[in-house]
Image 1 (cartoon, one colour):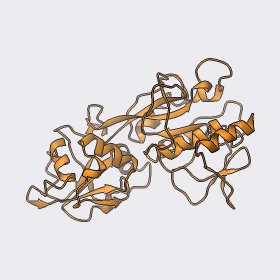
Image 2 (cartoon, helix red, strand yellow; image 1 turned 180 degrees about the vertical axis):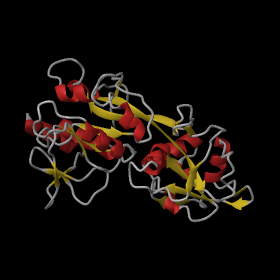
Image 3 (cartoon, one colour; image 1 turned 60 degrees about the vertical axis):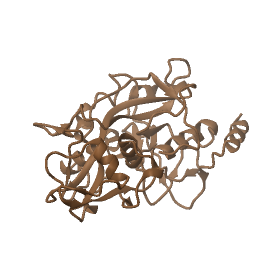
Image 4 (cartoon, one colour; image 1 turned 90 degrees about the vertical axis):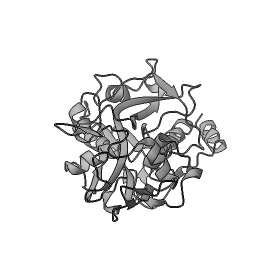
Length: 329
């Protein structure tokens, strides 16, 4: 059976399994990889949720950052290159499904939903809600308290609008197919081929230190901004300030939490094999306890989720589908 699974994996191009010299080792019961958008909040949740039987570790969830210097050592003894982003995490989960010998990934962190909902292979379980807005320098004339409309942002990023408030615009984007870039462009209605030549599309995601000119404008994860400015994670916001979009503020007073009415928002997910949580034997009790339902371990940690800048949307198992191997983040 293992040989058959491996053959299926090879036929599908599932070439994630490698054997480098050194790696990080898995030490907890449930292991996740993938999205950089949710890596920090999953680290926080992993540190807060105990393993009920204390085996193989006192904590239940282990979640690897999207970037790092080493691969990941799997329970099966091999290693995988560290998955960077939603698509890479989903791909790693596919590898585990089609080649159980790898035995490495139990869930994928994803900021995207399924591409194909005609099948039920995987279940996308929301655990939080995040949003993306634009940032400008605090001392720039672009920081006018009004922000931009969606139509204006579409014109800015296709380079048909080159000035705003008397300032020459110098729009920025993260690298192609990064999670924030893909989501933001989708919300403003710009395809990759339509991004204008005036755009610098090579900057890091959600890093305000790249805003070095009064004309700079860049998309930014509101959750990351809140977590950075509250000291929960490394603060990279610099002098960046969040802008309104279509007149709607990204945060609400008095606590400065994510505004649930903000237009550029989405659920973020922990994706698991449907067969392990669908109520039919053999289910994975640890996965279900961690993620399924409003009383799951993760959903009961709403304070931690909000502390990392996210809104709450948690526990549903109704979104099921599949992820083609060619898809991008």
